[in-house]
Length: 425
Image (cartoon, rainbow, N blue to C red; front, side, top):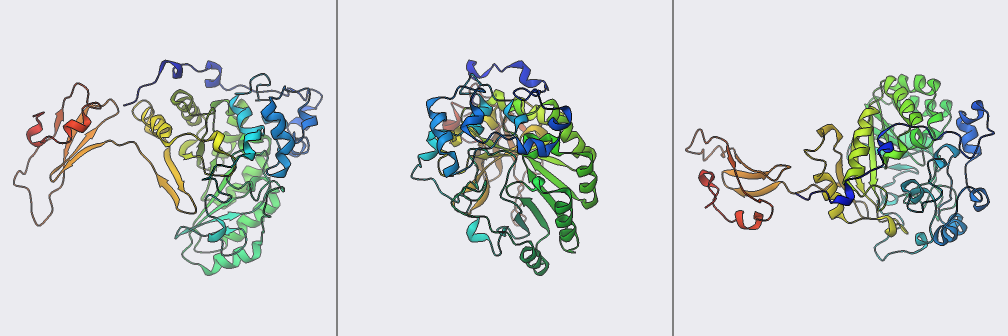
């Protein structure tokens, strides 16, 4: 097992705690304004002029901000902006939100539509890839814009494509396709729709008998916790079973306000899961990720997926190696509760769907046993079930623990040895 290096063993202890960023650069806003999600949207930071006086941009950031609206708009709610360290260009929140000139450099493997959604879209806005479920894109706007956005081609209003939406055609398609039992609302961000518009859409979906399960994918509770009002939660309760996937990448994002917003959703009976994207300089550190997943559980959110960053154009400066993702999962497994461990996945480039990627805990296989290692590197042998047509003569093989001084270094050698009778030789 890969062990944590000394540099990974420290994290700002305040990030384990829940704190509020306060009103920061907007001290003149009244409490009513600050807690109004529509005021937050109207006052989003969208330009170089709005950044002036709030932070000193690096040369790479300055150039990136000037070019942002040619590809993916910059937009950061005042609330979320206050989480940015204005003095540290490597701040994990800043790396996610402030454009950089590197976004204009495309690696040879970069793709405009890395998940291949366009060719799996039978009607505008509806992606039908998996047999029993669909992705329903309902808006092209977000509360804030992540610089690694998989749908940067169609969101924010400045991408190379316009997101075409036709709710009536999408509903008609779903009515006809009785194999669909699960609908995920996304975009953009579905929680930016008004309560009425979102409620009307959910009601139309609930009226389709074969649709059993509704989901919403949203970063709004993180970017804009003010949107999670009691009225919204009361409306959402009408449409159970309704689940929600949120998107948190760093423990600093889990503030007092976010914890309260997530609590309102959980109290409304909405199961919550989290989807993180593995990002260089943000969460590519086992200690940071462990802090994040443990803090999520304290918010009643189950870590669900850890995504390898998609091959979106201009995101190579934020991508890590797959080996780094496997290292992080290995340093979670056994070191914290299983509830806290997400599934590491890669979206198959071009439309392959989510492919799970796991550390290799299977050391060897024989016809009648499988040899495993646990999180500490200890080796165990588990007997395989004999095929019915050729039952094993030993009806009670037993369970044996096999001791090795350094099983990881010896793995290549020991896989060639006999594992009969649990011996090393």
